[in-house]
Length: 191
Image (cartoon, rainbow, N blue to C red):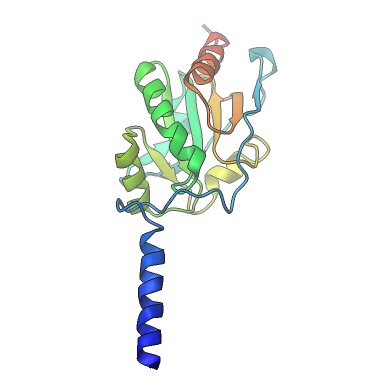
């Protein structure tokens, strides 16, 4: 009798865990454990930009990314993690804009330390994301963004060509807004 109860409990746990995965190495989408952005954003005029963001990190593919090496054109930083529902919603949007701005802006994801490399790679494959994502296991990126990024996920930050914060957006961003923020960052760049 007890063996049947344990077997039934084990089946229930396996079924529950199976329901938490999309079968592609990703957890089910969730809105638990983080603060979702509300769509508020700030755009900073070129003459008022004072905050430089600098950090380096390793991607899920094992490549090194250093923001200082990306200067000379706008950089879009997107803070995300795999089971964040709005992050999944905006991933294809970010990829489309990244393709549209190829050569004119760089895109870097910042996985906020919740996902391992395999999960990041599964997310990138599922949503067709081709730009790199830094694994922020040690919190260096978040530390560099302290005071810049709202405490919301996802958050998108646009740096100008000098590495100065030009704009920030809390929540799932749309194509038009992101394009406008990149154009605004580029417009304020020195000649």
